[in-house]
Image (cartoon, rainbow over all chains, first blue to last red):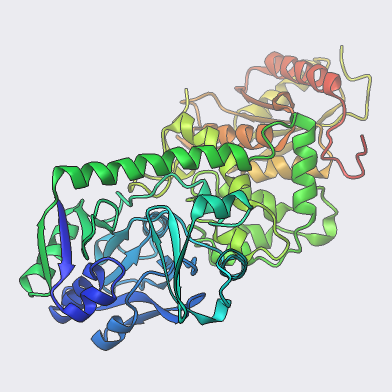
Length: 378
Length: 142
């Protein structure tokens, strides 16, 4: 089911980044008792947001609007046994599925309201972008928006827009994980919302994938919070075109960013030794990693900093464990204090074996191959 | 026969029921084997975490062998099915990491196959001698 939907409430519709459908539907779900609570990001300023769980409709209204400068992952905040709805970028949705596979909660309790995502920005670098490309004082930014490949920044002095391609040519722009991400429409979520395919209208393009998604959508319509109309053929085509273009761009970035590809075997080993030599063992990458759910983690308990190994066991264990579970969200790289390009490294390690297995983590509930008890290889 | 470069080390994980008995058989039959071999006995090859092999490399092994019962013969029914899957992960990891894949070997050896065990160790030693010491050894400088 593909429709264009918008919030009936004029205020929500005007404030929302594309018609306010997500906010209105969340409110409807809370009021009608479809869910017990929602997980949202509360805006502090353009660069900072705090994840909150709430069942207060007023708080939901405050959390309206998109936040491209806050690369959070919300999957940790789902409690077991609590019916939850939350907005999910593709990486959030994949994280939720991987965590559900590892028995952190029941997937049937979670309503994944997918958001189409073309990428998020690192908040520190975003400030630099705002200052150097837009010549706006970073702290005066009121609203930010991405539309048709342009980053639009709104401050007191008015609106300004710059093409994202221009920014990225200078080495700034989206996070590396987002640049190489080829899942832009979260087809593993219950429904996918976004402004791709919407032409000069305050509305959200909604695609419903599952029965749960249908339930969520119909609940919002029945409660009178949301109005909708069928999507036109031309709108669907535009959306598909954007998606294809984004996937193509991701492939381009994947080759461009990969500095290991040209190295021979021994140089590659040297590269990895050099990279992991930098590791200070802070365990931050493990703490933020969505699919990593171990309470007493092997990577930490097996590691011995005094052993004098060429590559710390901590990193090797993580490399191994993420071979069949890395969802490419880039949280690890965001928090790494010594800037190891972890997203790409994990991608390189998992790519080939996953292709062999025809398995993609976080797409469906298939058992992770490493835990499989039947032979998967011939 | 290989094994002249005595400082090459091959680490073998042997399962208690098949390949360890196979190694024992090789000795009973007085078969010649290079002295490069170090055996770690595990109850089942399914116990072998790929990390054990990696740790072996870091601790100074130049080659690692994973051995177990033939598929279908596992004492614990399906232990070696898991070994097979995990070994594939290990192989990919070692390959991507920049070690030669020839430093690794998975072999199914039953309790009566002493001759095969000796042969495999010989082959493995020759293979690894060609590659030289592992660059993951402590203090390895190229």
